[in-house]
Image 1 (cartoon, one colour):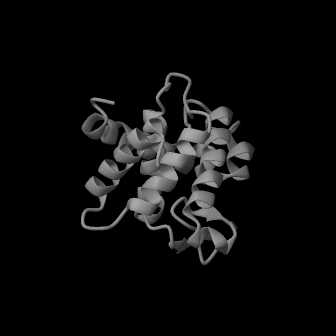
Image 2 (cartoon, rainbow, N blue to C red; image 1 turned 120 degrees about the vertical axis):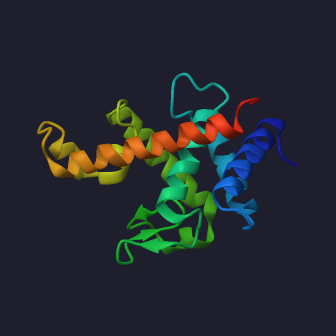
Length: 164
């Protein structure tokens, strides 16, 4: 039986995911997301109920994998719904492990650049090397990806999290 706080997150994840990819069973991924988001710190300081965190996790998963935990990308290097670069293949069958790693990486990304919270997640170490040079293409792409994920999260929350 789920704790009430986890149930609320689960229902939010399920609503957002079903809105993005209708007609697919999102139960396992939504449950993994809800459990991990409940257990981990919020990604944002002004997010006591972790709704903003849920929106961003969903946005990242949708853009990275289409909400498919068995997705493999980047010529076989990225795995699972969060597209963890060089992540273990076991993540493909373990959505909670995938989401745990992804949220941990997002927490680091938010700390590194709060103005572009998904940029480090998107570009990794290359983002750290190019931050000083604002014209670096890697940074521009990473910031564009971050803006896209944040915009999608905001739209999801406006539509699905009004009462939460």
